[in-house]
Length: 486
Image (cartoon, rainbow, N blue to C red):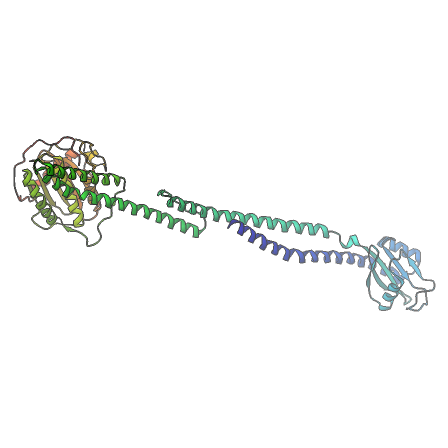
């Protein structure tokens, strides 16, 4: 493209220069010729008054010397009484004659000025009427150098100007080509980098408007590709983590099978399946969180979802001797969260309780409905979490029980999609309490400093909230596993 622009500019500028320079050069030459013969006419006119007064040779020689020179001017006076068409008798010739007698006789006969070619230039033959009625002819020699005086310099200036125009146009076209080609090359390089898997490849927005729009479109496409890949990884991680709920059931049921080859094979198969699921989750742990909020009209009844999921987990709780309770789920509570997302979040938290606490450990789910937010509290009577910050960090588990930390991240993303957040603190049962703040109007959740302070405020809020218990039980304190991480 760059060289094509240079060639087009070169051709167009050259044609324009030729179209203007050639006629202008011819005009300059004609102007120089006209200037030379105008000077010759002025010299001839200076002699005419003297010829009309006298024909004395000496006086005319002085006039010729003052008007021009013997080498450049001549005066041809016919003989007195001679015929106008004859050229004989005692004719007087002053100066050097270059024109032929025929040309001089023709000018006398026509009575008007004429030019004729002679060796080394041209001559101007100007007829002048004498007092005697005869016609004298003044001959002025115009050399070729006078006709072309200044023409060569003018043509050289024209050629230089034309060459400068061509060079300037080529330079400008080259710069314009570079300005167009470089952004196009960057766009091509960015497309190659993106095609090779370097998802961070972006193109600077510069150059002409068309290329700027192309760069903006390319960057938008690259961002969309990155987001789509991140969403795919998130989906894989979320779906894999949701498999932990039935895996927990399988593991608990397998533990109650007793001894025997079949029981051992079942437990080994469940453990292998858990390892495979953990591998899938860890593979997708670097994906960016998807924080798309629920659209208009989307949402669910949080109380109904809580009752449904607690009905599922209560069967496992009875098998393990765990006491549990539900509070605040006796009336509808609408939240801007999809039903599947809330169910997955509750399953992640309750699955963590069963996975990371010992059998017999009590747990509870409380639902608080406020004016601008809904709070879901999941608490247990375990030993708590030693490092809540690490537990909230995506993909950072304790490393002692194979935890990926993705469960809490699923909950956090669900809460942040509404403008809320998730906090970890100490529960009234003596273990861990996970507070899910679901914003109802999309505003940012208020900042609370410290986990213990947040727990104290939540306790005060719980006292005023209705809390009918499905299965009210005291909170025992059984031995729990160490190094717990949600």
